[in-house]
Length: 352
Ligand code: GDP
Image 1 (cartoon, rainbow, N blue to C red):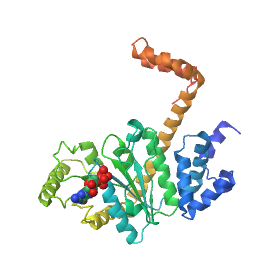
Image 2: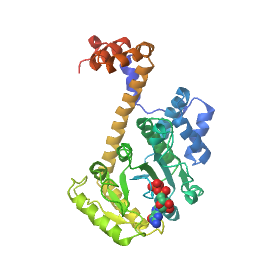
Image 3: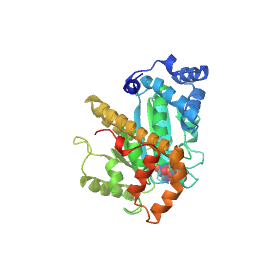
Image 4: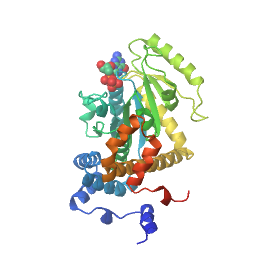
């Protein structure tokens, strides 16, 4: 086969029999499609594994499950630790399963790879929701970079969708870059805010506010006046920002995850935007952009992994890093030498 033909395979659909080489994987595939929890959990474990053979199986499973995915409402929820995310998601999830939905909750918590402990917490979360067979709750994959965590979660979204969950909630902490990652894998992104914290404290950070399609001031039961004040402050701040959609003014709702107040309205609001985007094709276009961005992130990540694993690079890298840190080697010059050592030769580069 010519090299260009090999690459062309990437654009072809793959039959299930072609892709799944073992009975075990065929069973996982069948089990996921039947919505079996064990098969679902096992498949996600394969996805999160760092073992190359597990990854290979996971990628094949994702490829054949893909045609069965895509039917869910994908909702991202963020907010600072303590704002009430898990309480809120439990209230929302219970509301949704009562209404006949099947709800999957995934998490993106890169803190577990940095600090060793997770911000989203190892405490028992969403106790009632997690015991309900109509819900599936999966904590954040551990021990990976934000990029890795985000990629694994994106893959898990496809798998839970193939298993028949029609609402996928992706939770993340309101710190760092994780909101951007989650906004880039969901249809609608919601931000929970506290009623009583000052602007600096809860960081009405422009970047995060700009990602929000819906904002909820949670814990409105604690102090209704403070919540109303926070709502108008947020509305003022939103007025100063460029809207994501010209025909959608980001609503600021008052909610209480504890009493359930505002939770139904929150969902109606999310669905109003989702339906609006679905009806005129903007949702499909957004998902297409997300998939293409994901393609490039995957290529970047795999190239980097390949490069770092190259024996010549591994042998030279420690000294090169020291030389760059000490100012003896210019980073671009050193990078060029390492690339050449890995066989990526400037002279043989393709024409742009
Ligand atoms: P997370 O860190 O954002 O996931 O926040 P949690 O859901 O763990 O909530 C932090 C604390 O706030 C817990 O003690 C909750 O019981 C409490 N909490 C969450 N939502 C509300 C609410 O709407 N009202 C009140 N009064 N307390 C809440």
